[in-house]
Image 1: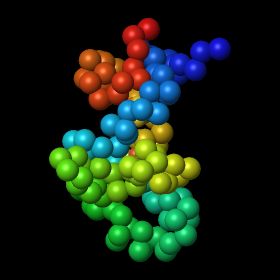
Image 2 (image 1 turned 180 degrees about the vertical axis):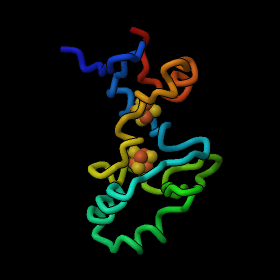
Image 3 (image 1 turned 135 degrees about the horizontal axis):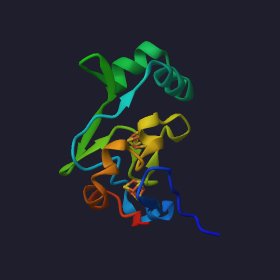
Amino acid sequence: MSDLMTEEGFAYSFNPKACETCQGRCCTGESGYIYVTKSEIEKISKLLDIDVKLFVNTYLFKKMYKYSIKEVVYENSHECIFYDRDSNGCKIYDARPAQCKTFPFWDYYKTRVDELKLECPGILDD
Ligand code: SF4
Ligand code: SF4
């Protein structure tokens, strides 16, 4: 049985096995925004067992009217503060934001598959 993931309306497939060796390219590299909604903030705070206000002040920053997860710089890489280099995984996986859950099937990439392939080695043409 194929492990490839597909989504209607996207002209590519995704092989999640690629994550095992890719070193979290979608959580590291260039600086970017990892937006979290109010309900996601509550969910992550619960997972981390800390007060919502403390979570916001410690791990998030405001970008216009939204909140984004902070990054840390490792060598030349801007990495999500929840990316764990040791395990090559996400420290808040069970409560990770929708933006992370839906990658690599973002509308933005529908017409930018070549750009996506440069970031994610799990992308295959249909
Ligand atoms: S860039 Fe692609 S292969 Fe790498 S961790 Fe992210 S989703 Fe997985
Ligand atoms: S929250 Fe987790 S999945 Fe999302 S960018 Fe950060 S480390 Fe990656």
